[in-house]
Length: 244
Image 1 (cartoon, rainbow, N blue to C red):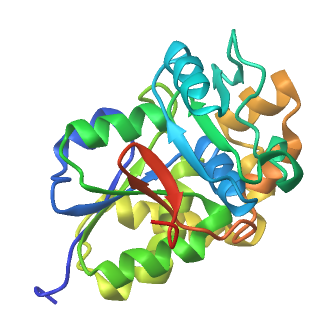
Image 2: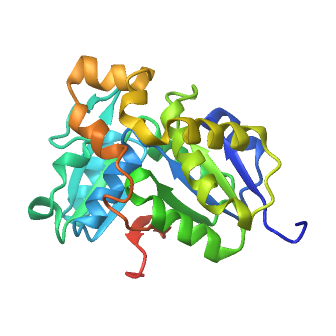
């Protein structure tokens, strides 16, 4: 047991500094919606996704690369951008062979925080690419930190549910002595048969559905393996593994 790598779950970006990311696989999780959108775009043929932490930078880089500047702030289309953070927006006929430059309130910010803490091995995870995430973290045989993006440093249950889904599949390959991981797996197991129904209790569901009507987004974001690709961060880009 002691020879196995460790697995921890960070429930919020405000807690991620407590974990050693330097020799770990860091899974950035922002289920509603950044990491689901990244999976959808790459699954539908995007060349790669450039995650950035500000709207001006998204516009600047997209102009340099001839890409699509996209993103949101506080759940809605960010001022100055024409394309948002909805996975439903990035159908194959729109995104294939294009570059997506994406900025979001929580997920892309967390990715940059992980980089600042020395993480050298970063992937993004969501229910649409659950199996790819599980295969990857198992094959790497490294310590893993499941990093939940939350909402402006606050706890968000949908990200923790996804962490629990990963743990349910990979736990026998890791040494797990982590109460947040234990809680994540328990919550997932309790609700796995009706994630969409359970999600109606969640604060971010109400933020996105009651205010903006994004019910189709939510349904996609909770559908396991609907866009089963592995977004791997490499030199400023999230690339579908196999394209490196």
